[in-house]
Length: 194
Image (cartoon, rainbow, N blue to C red):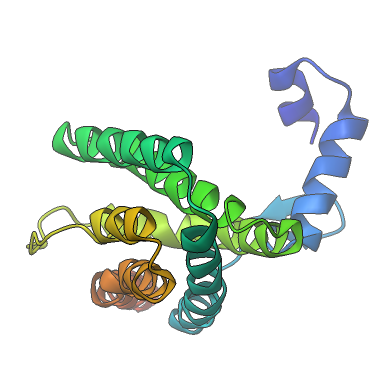
């Protein structure tokens, strides 16, 4: 806590409060009373978070399609273009930031602050897991039409069912890669212990 406070130029109290809040939301785990760590990345935690995101973000996308404005559609196009530019440049951490912005802005357009808060909490917990997606760049990736483009098409058409389906496919689309990387990481830890 002291190191973070010093790096941020603030007193330890707001840092401690922020870390306690992140622990309450499941993004961190408090250990030994004063230390905080990122929770262990497991297949089970990823699958649970993915299922919840599919349900809730699907609902958000459907509602957003019903409320879609030109400004929202233009904003989502911009966010998607930035995501693709970051991926093309090989800046995968930046790509994840643009991807998160796309998803959260889409969910915000659903017009439900409660839904948005829940989804934001899920994204807090998903962050470390999504880092696993690009952990092994040697894995082949199959490039298809990005689901974000289908979401945008659905918003233009005000097609709630298509928007819901497209965002759900986007959330589930990299599941195999993430699961493989999580298993590979776990096997590496097991090998390191023997």
